[in-house]
Length: 382
Image 1 (cartoon, rainbow, N blue to C red):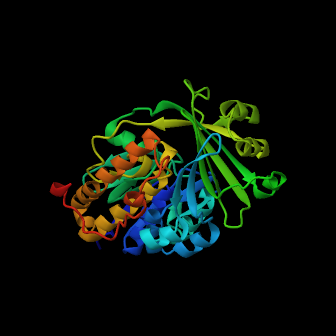
Image 2 (image 1 turned 90 degrees about the vertical axis):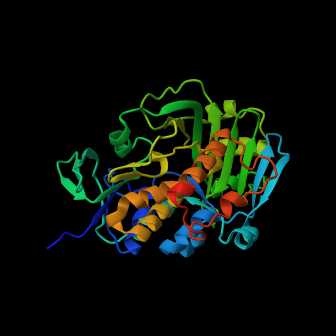
Image 3 (image 1 turned 135 degrees about the horizontal axis):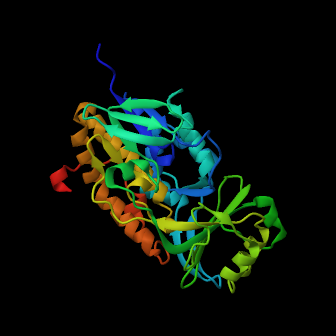
């Protein structure tokens, strides 16, 4: 008897989980290997625009996600003195013009919905890759716990420090790009001590730094901020993040509006994260292995679209494999890159420039995008 074709997704993050769910819905046999020992409510806030919500509609989790998230009517951009730089309509406008809601939510709550959408038993935790071998007929996987597996193709959705990317292109550490992000979740109850209108989604700007602030639940139980602050050197070594402090935040946002000072005063636990980057990759796939998301095109978080690009990647890869079948994965990989490289590169450039929605502009090219609403480009048309 011939074996059933198998797909191994490396990494159960937002992009990997989206790819796995849609591939499973298309009838593929998919296993997901995640190095974390178990699922946990990691991360903090995240934006999900209409472009990503249309993918979640296909997966079947759009409605529960809408129910848990916050629905801002606007993205406000404000100068440090509080004056408005832009008012970008979301809310009902987004539903009408872009075809889906715009929400902000806790990343862990979104991720839980995605993991629950996968077939029982298909996610394997505690599986850190230690080796890959493309034999020509299959790919053999070895894990640090001594276990092994094999698959017909490998989807590398394992983040900026991707083992799959390293296997394809050799070791190259991501570079620190001279920026840090401070993060904090603030209980909504703590904000009642201040006489300010804490807006549902606002980005505070000055010449060289910013602070993005929004609710992560529809009930306004959590308010979240994430900064972008220049810092010449990263003091945390190889750590993903280190503890920060209110004193550091006060210093970084000296002179900002009193409502920003109130946010800092309300933040009891603040962490600081280095912003990392990589050069554009010369290839997105080789042989039986293909990359998506931060493994492929990491970007600064300044546009709030990095996760959405990984989710779009996963959906496009599933769509292309659905068109060709697993037997012609090489054509699927070419179609995938032809239909993703231009958009992902444009979003990456705008995100890295940190200009998105600072002034009044039309975001339709991002939010109005419907991955399922157009014919696939061929490789030659890309």
